[in-house]
Each structure stands twice: as C-alpha cells, then as structure tokens.
Image (cartoon, rainbow, N blue to C red; front, side, top):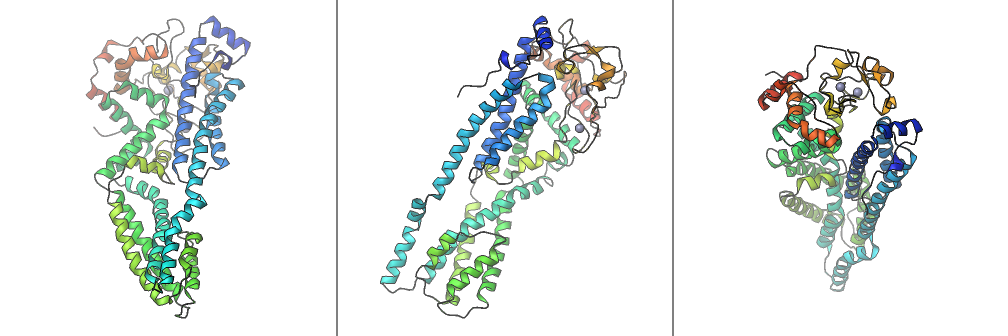
Length: 490
Ligand SMILES: [Zn+2]
Ligand SMILES: [Zn+2]
C-alpha cells in the first residue's frame, strides 16, 4: 500500500487564504505540516486497529465506526490550524479504512478459523473414539469423561475469566508499585515524562512527545509495566490469585449442583446443566464441549464429581506451572480485553488540549472544566512559532506576549495579524495570564538551546535568537528548573 501523501488539492481552497499562502511562499510549509498531521493520525489509528485485532474476538462494525470517530476527533481539533478541505478528509479516511479493512478481514478470518466446525470436530475426534472403545470394552469411562470436561470446557473458560480481570488488576498494582508516585496525579506523571526526556537526551524522542503525544505516553506506560512486572511483581502472582478465586467458585458450584439430585446414572446430564447454570455469571462454558462429555455417559453423580475434583486439582497445578513460564510482557498487554496502558493513560493525560502558542498541555485536571490553563508556559519556538519578518523561531513566553503590543498570525486568524492581548477572540476557552516578568523555566531554556538548530531545520525556519546565558545552562540546572516548575521539593 502506498504511503499517504499530503497534496496541493488538500489545502483549503479559500481564495484569500490560498493567495496569502502563495504570497508568503507558505504552501510548502502548509503541506509539510499537513503531512506530519496525517502521519500522526494514521499512526494513532493503526495502533488502535492493531490493538483491536489482537483481542481474540470477531470483527464488528462498531470497530470501523470507532476508527472514523478517531479521525473526526483529530480533524475537529486541528481543523483551524491546518485549513484542510473535504478532499483531504475523504482521502485520509479512505487511506486509513484501507489499512483497517485488511487488518479486520484477517481478524475475521482468524476468528472463523478458530471456530471452523471441521476443525472443532477433528479436535473432538479422539474423545469420541475413546468413548467408543470404552463402550466396546465395557470399561468404566467416568474418570476420562471428567478429565475431558475439565480440560476442554473448564480450562478455556477459566483462562478467559483470568484475562478479563488481569487488565484492571495490573492497573491496581501499578498505582501502588515503585512507579506509584508518577501515577498519583497528572502533574507528577507529566513531571516524570519531562525528566525522562531530559535524561534520554534524544531529539527524536522529544519530537515524538510533541507530535505523537498519545503513542509516546502509551509506549512509556507499557515500558513501566514491563519494568515493574519483571522485577518487583509478576503476572503469575496476579493470575494465580484469580485462579484460586475461580477454582473456589467452581468447587462451590459442584457442591450446589449435585445437592438435589438422586445418586444414579441418569442424573449426570441434569448435574451438568445445574453446574453450568450456577457458574453462568462468572464463566461461560461451551455447550458443544458439554455434549461431547455427556455422550454415552453411564455413571453415578457421586463418582463423576469425585473424579471432577481430582481433575480440577490437576488442572490447577498444570495452570500454575504454565503461568510461571516467562512471557513477552508487552505482547500480552495488547492481547488483554482491558488494556492497562489505555486505562492508565486516561488517568494521567488530563484534557490534553494544548496552548495555542507554546503547545504545552492544559494543566486543569479531568475533562470537566470551562477554561484551559497552563501553570508554566514555554518558549513559543517549541510550538513552532516564528517571526514573520525574520523567520526566526520565537524564544518569548506566551504570558509575556499577551501582555505586549505584539501580534501573531496563524491558520485561525486566516494568516492576518491579530494582537496577542486579544487572543481570546480566537481562543475564548483559554486563560493565559498576562505576566511580563515570568521567565521560562531553566528546563525549557536548556531544551531550546540544545535543540534550537534541529528544531529550525524541522520547521523550515531559522533558529531562535536566544540569550547567551541560556546556552550555559547545564542538564542538572535544567532538572532543578523542572522540579521548581512542578513544585517538587529540591
Ligand atoms: Zn503557552
Ligand atoms: Zn483543559
């Protein structure tokens, strides 16, 4: 499949806008930012699609709807900045649906393959064969029937039960793990991300954080889970806890299911029906496999339940042994029905709206707030703002500029100059406190000084002119600055 390419026809056809773009030679720039935006939407959607295909369920139309909703959300949020048109929307959606249709088709095929009647019959062939041999030799097959039921019906249902809880169990463990402090609030998490970025000293990681925030953060959360569950905790501990719990429930259900029945050879089918009913709210047992077990059964209820207990104990031991084997942690996270990385992301990402000038994420907690605000803004160069006259990236803070007589322009203002102090005409939902004395933290001064040239190349602009003093800030001072900005005791 061809990679997506932003084209001239995707840029808004408003004559005034187009004319301005031509005049300022910005068309190339507009196309480049459109390309970057498209790639980031494609990456996010691709990630969602792959996540969905890893859960062992069948395809459902709601999955495609969710993909389209994700695209709509991104388009709505970025429409003003990008000035795209319907052609762009259609091309982008077609491209992403192309990826989705191939992956979802494979998902559906895999699902059918698992459910293929011939394959399922082949699987039961040996059970039927043994039943016939036992019948022919007039041998007691009670023990084997109990084993078959435990292995073919209960085992998959128990595994499903454990997986269903594992996602939330992992989240519960993470918030009390050695990473507990980071996950305790949105701001401590943001602090830890920025601290880690500084320590990594990797420009590409910074770019991923700025441009693909959600993917960056989810990957980071997966890494944290991997670290925790390789050292201080283990998946098998959590799985064994749930195994013990469901085992107990099955024992109780066996007890209840056999109570009202006479101890004769006729009552086993009735017992099985009761057992499935009692377990119904916790696990679902496939009736196909129960039918195979009941085929030609001739034993008393008591004998059957005795062997059932025995087989259950064996199964418990067998599963515990399997759980203790090492696994690919990240791969298993994506296979869970509730993905812990998504749950944790929702807790720590806040409303995720970014300042229109410096692109710092909003600091107001949760989603329910009327005004977005940022506690400490950063130099606007990091939000890719440049001077119209000199094409140099701007090192000043948004708080300083909304207190000045300077003007800005962007897609929202139709590339017309507009006074910074009247920013609310275009951003009524933002509250940027004017403050001419506020300075960027040493952290952002250091980041801009370090990556100034590479940022300029990336944005097709000239490097920001920054005070000499910024260039001598050390990494250690940058970290101190970050601590101060987040109110962390030095
Ligand atoms: Zn800002
Ligand atoms: Zn907000």
